[in-house]
Image (tube, rainbow, N blue to C red; front, side):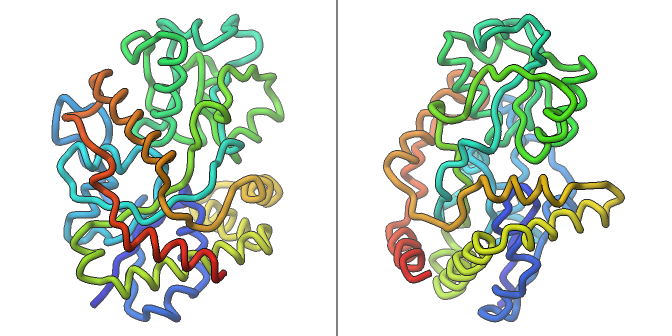
Length: 313
C-alpha cells in the first residue's frame, strides 16, 4: 500500500526527512503530501473558530496518513470527532518563540493586552501560548483582538503597526530583532512545554503497525542526522524558500535548528495534562466545538515502540 506522509517546514523533522531518502529505504511506496499545496477548508462548525485543516486532511482521500504539527491541531481534530492518536512528542521547544511587542509600544505586560491586536498563526501552538498567557493574567480571548498572521510575515505587521503584539518564532524573529527593539511580554519557558508532535488515524495505526514503526524509526534516524549536522539540514529550508522566490539566511536557519530538540519521545502524563488544560481553556473561551478527553488519543503500544526506537538511535 502507499503510505502518505504530510509535511511542511514548520515541522522541521518531517521536512528534513522528506529530503533525505531515509524513509524510502524502509518504505519504498511513500507519497509525500506538501500541506502548503492542499486547498484550505473552512471550519465545519461555526462554534469552532480554530482551523481544522490538519485533521480534515488526515481523514480525506488525497490527504495523508501521518502528520507532524505543533501543540494545538490534534486538540482541534479530537473536538471535531476525528479519531486521531498520538505517535510521539519532541522535547520542549521553549527557545523557539515568545510573545513580543515593540519596545516603544507602551505595553509593559500581558495584562496590558486588553483591547489590543495580537498576531498569531491561529490554530497552531501560538494559539495555545496566547491563551495560556492571557489566562495567567486573568484575561480571556474576548478581551483581545486576535489577528491571524503568517508565521514569518507577522513580524512585518508588528513593525508596521498593523498589530500591537506578536507571537513570533525563529527564524522569523531573527529578522525583526536585527532592526527593531522588542520587549518580551511572555517567554514560552515557564508557560508550557511547546513540543513538536506527531499523530495519525487510529485505523492506520491498527491496520498498518509495521509501516508506522518504519516511519518512527526513520524519523529517529533523520533527527539524529540533524543533530550531527544542523547546517546541512538548514540548507533544505533555504533551498525551499528560494525555490518559492524568497530569500533566507542559512546562518539563521542553522541557529534555529540548533536551538530545537530533535528525536521523538513517548507522550507523557505531563504533556497530556498540558493538552487537557489547553483543550479545557479553548472550550471555555469558545474556540472548541465540544469537550474532549485527550487521553482517548493514547495507544500504549505506540508509546512503547517510540521509547524503544529512541533508545536504539
